[in-house]
Amino acid sequence: MKKTLVIWVAALVLCQALQAQIVGAGKAVDPYKYTIVKKGTFSKAAVSSAHPLASQVGAAIMKRGGNAFDAAIATQLALAVVYPEAGNIGGGGFLVGRKKDGEIVGLDYREAAPAAASRDMYLDRNGNAQLNLSQNGHLASGIPGTVAGLFATLPYAKLPFTQLVQPAIDLAEKGYVISAREASGLNSARESFLKYSTRPTAFTKEGKWKAGDTLVQPELAATLKRMQKDGAKGFYQGETARLIVEEMQRGKGIITEEDLKNYTAKLREPIEFNYRGHHIISFAPPSSGGILLAQMMKMIESFPVSEYQFQTVKSVQLMIEAERRAYADRAEHQGDPDFWKVPVATLTSDAYLKQRMADYDPDKAGVSANVKAGQIPQSEETTHLSTMDAEGNMVAVTTTLNGGYGSKTVVGGAGFLMNNEMDDFSAKPGVPNMYGALGGEANAIAPGKRMLSCMTPTLVLKGNKPYLTIGTPGGTTIPTSVYQALVNLIDFNMNLDDAINKPKFHHQWFPDEVSVEKDFSAETKKQLEAMGYKLKERGGIGRTEGIRILNGKREAVADKRGDDSVAGF
Ligand code: GLY
Image 1 (cartoon, protein in one colour):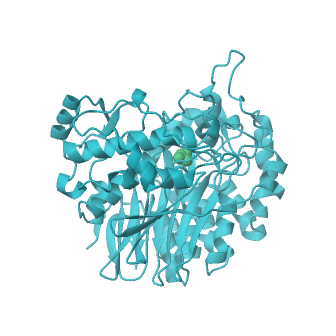
Image 2 (cartoon, rainbow, N blue to C red; image 1 turned 90 degrees about the vertical axis):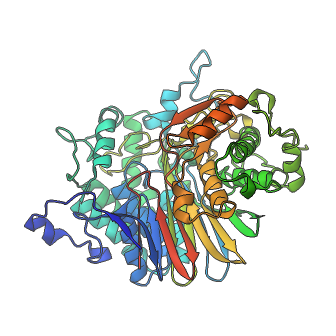
């Protein structure tokens, strides 16, 4: 059963109707009139992403013979146009996929620090961290990885890149109608775009954006066409690279042509573990997401969580204490594995995790100041998409600019936003980044190093067969959102809709507080406070997208917390 929500009736003037067909995706995608579809059950293939047009593009590509990897590429490219807040070609991300023959693919296309970056680059002469520089403008950007990631995904896809990028080109060239949420986002970022970009951008105009306006991005369309013609070189070399470097030079950024030319996506072995009869596959460092997920789930596995029941004080307290301990380990032990030896095997071993929970007291709130990282011998704006096809391939991709609209620097002449991912490094030990996360030596800045992420694109197998693809944006709340969605499904036997949309909570060691969504149980809140927990109400946690196989069909769900939408057939 589809539950559709018509968000607006677009003014369909004749000329728009004539333009409405997105050539690369057929008539299925009308950028001037579309609806948000929160859930759907499809017999063959499905996509769940942060924007209805991007999900429709992915589904249309599979209808034309593409597989889940083709859909992941085309959906990401469409998101780079219709979801400028986080969809991107100026950022980076991680993909975990499972081919129909069982092969697991882990692609790291996280941004990297430029060659001229240095450990103390964000400290002033008194040693104080200047987080405005790691969070906004030209110096905040790492070398973008997304385009390298798209081309590294291509060998697993079936259709040529020229076809996969065409819908995004059409959307950028002809424009698409924006929602009230998007209009409000662009209006709030207006002053930042003007401050941190050196050339006029498509994102600012005379007066305010409103729902129903059409956003056209001709410079971005030209950049996508260069990629269509010259492949990855159409971004990392030639005209686009020149435009990026010129933008950097105008704004005192440090990314060079050499940095762009040398960037490569890397294959990584995912983190895999079992939890109550399910096999879970998630991302390895330089994302901390997979290890955090494994640690939190394995720390609670020996407890009868389903008996404790959903969001009672008993189940929430146990889950918080696992979160606290896992995030303490993250700060000390996780970083780019090409620069820092991450003790993956120990951090995820049963013996270590049992010992981490040895001081767990079910009657008392833990105190982060007393919980150190375990002893080892020796923005919140990101976006997630899930795709599943009829052949049995499934893909989870989380990609990001870091904060909403990244560094707010639009590359002059090339029309896309750069990331502010340098803030995900630890600018100074003990100084929290924009997500309040702490870090130390493991995540210090070094040239070429990839900043530690929390992105947690995740696949689940049941009986060694594809079962679920899931993930979410949300900075440090990413691993805890995926953790809770999985516990909701597996321990509390919820359907996917409830598993994703029920209220969430989050603890990340420091600050020593539990964030809860507004609709979190008032009774549980009261009981946690009585035990000594400090609770803080906050806006939505994550925007989770998931697809699972249920009775042979693809059940797709898009989070209620945004314009997120599913598509399929
Ligand atoms: N920028 C958010 C993350 O990578 O976790």
